[in-house]
Image 1: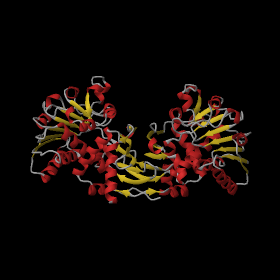
Image 2 (image 1 turned 90 degrees about the horizontal axis):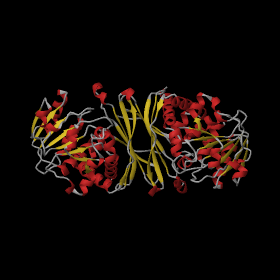
Image 3 (image 1 turned 180 degrees about the vertical axis):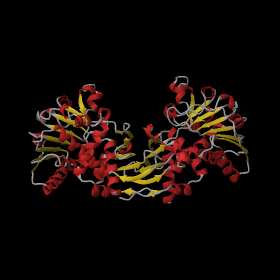
Image 4 (image 1 turned 90 degrees about the vertical axis):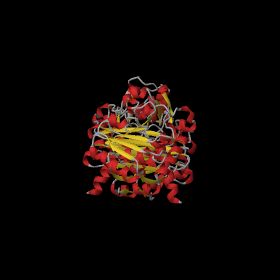
Length: 315
Length: 315
């Protein structure tokens, strides 16, 4: 048996941000309509190594594939100048179980997470939204920017990161790409003031974004919190926002709301809807009022990306 | 990044049955001493395709690796002349999360399951045990035989399978290997009468082996039941045996005892011990009385096999 192997570069060469955003939008619709399936992801926690691994299985009927993504999170790798996340995706035939492909999935993970952010922006903000603040300017902030600009005409960007070099990197990236106004800020109030969109993508475990930082009309993509105990947005902010989750169970367990759920100050019924439900019925939300998309990352997104990729390269 | 890929043949060429039995014995000891870790496996159930997939993560400190096995079970593949199980194992550094190897794991799964059966025989039977009955003569029966013969001098084998050709295949395999007496039986009473060891490895969902078939001194390796609803041994037989499990939670959820647990006719405290606990204290069992090893398959076994393999090929 030989199983074809595809690299991160193969993914980058074959899926544009525009395609990714369209794909992830379809993946959320499919999931909301039970055309794809996934059990809740499981964690292999290795606190002795300051990291964890997650196994994320899924089935996608659109591309007729099943598989699992295996992905780690080792935040301290950054200090060693190594990626904190590296992922691999195994793809199989759902009919026979036989392996079809092995896909390096670090880029795929980063792109589909950016794409989910863009889909949230599409459905949670008015078409006039034109300014973004990035709280946390690491690799994922770049993907959020690249995907969101496929959806909205961004005129102004503010960047805030505890590491100046990281902020500078995102600044340069955006400046080289677009002609919009970009500013690096040293405090969060300055960065987030009057913004249409705020993207948080930090590894923090206690809230850094508060209700006072966020306009009454602002949409937040809360990307960083994806494991129990992680939280970027304060309870006040959560309670005052229309909450959209990618998956209800997963968000309650490991999304930005997980601590509030654990502390019983935020209840399941306070979730406005899943992103998939919102795509099926956009009247659920008031795009002119504050909203928060709680992203945890779904295996069905990964599987849809892999399915599209495999179909494309096979021609 | 390039990740080395190893095939089923690489595993077969590098791990003998003897080595596998020793390895799996150590793996059970390590697990009982918390030197390895695994969350409970998760299932991606695809009843529409008469199959399922399982994600099985684990960490092994002996070989300093973490990883996941992704394995399917599609029993109806046999009708299409295809393997019902095919598995892949991703191996990573626990320190950084970076991928170290991709290992084809269908043979590895088959061998480590056989090896676990042999370890159970080592600790649950007297040294004089010399006869085996195989109920179900498929591929796994062959591995059970190959591994058990490393532990006990087998003089006599009986084989029973609903498919005559399958029984014949195992017969030929054993005859070509050893000089012991081998007989194919057409009914289960004939096959199991006066046997020291009985190995069940069938895909049945209702019991085929009853108390009446099994001697008061007999040890059973119950291999087939590895998912909720599967069961090979009757409640009476379970209730009258010293029950050894590979993992308590997993066996209660998907081992031979799962239906009895579900029906509340078998309680957790009726389990004698895990195989790992038994290896640490062999006085827990009376090897001259009926015993039943409920095998569900543990990710820590897979990880130990992969760790040993990688260490060996790297020299």
